[in-house]
Length: 194
Length: 194
Image (cartoon, rainbow over all chains, first blue to last red; front, top):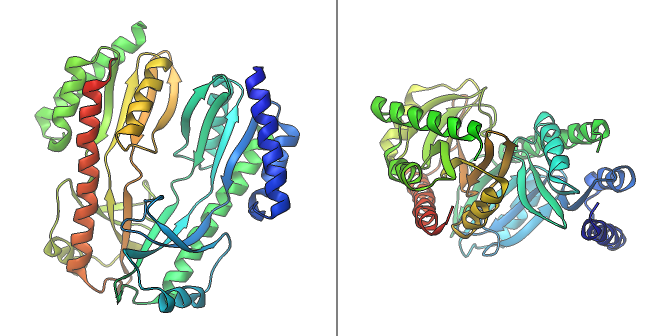
């Protein structure tokens, strides 16, 4: 294995331990990441999220840098959570409630390992996964499910929600669909021999 | 270059010409595909879409196989288009209006070519692109922008739209954002030396 890869793995582990101490690590994904660092010799994770619900102020829901995050939670939410944001915020652009499925970045030692991982990812329902970069520091695989649903909440003073309780229930179900895929991924990783 | 790759390229070209004759090729992307087949020796496209608006009946908007497509257009739509579907259809699951940005599958001769393509794709705003498979028949790169927005329209008899004219205008703007990225991609491909 390349020196550069091993150094990156060590750094990623240090970073993970630091994030744990600060409380940055999303609890639904902690066990999976620990498992990978403990049991996989040709694989590690960098940024990872178990899935979450956010409320953002942005022109379009896919924007990142130009978006203000007003609310973020990795667990199901309540109608009250949304009401509070709606009552408080007059959007600059638009308020979107965005439900995102899990997303993980894996770094494998070789391209061969990345191909094996991709096959398992597809089986576990991470259907939109792909290799996003390659180099001496390893091959980066982005694991994504396709579960990502924005709901337009508000524009100016105009509220676009007719039934908030229903929307919140739907958003929570979508979040849990994503968490279920993460469970499948955890099982698949245990079978993966790299 | 591998024999297998060249054979796949020829087959993809035959398929494209057939699709053109039948009228299957989405007109906004025709020129780009023709350019790639004519001018690029180490690259071809398979399935491609310039971006579209669909109305689907499905439990969740990301589903494919379990979804019924009730409406599909690669150009801006009118409120009347949506009203007609809403009046006609009582959904089995839910009706979603889904705006999708462009999506293209490129097959490159080597992994090196795929890396060069990925770099250009990112610059052209196809930020979620990645390598989805590799083999003797070439490396498949999925080019996607992240522009994908579903709107919940109806569930049972319950309509979730408060202002259809506004929703349609927003959907059309999102569609055009996607088409603009496709233009940027066309320019980037002209610069790409593979």
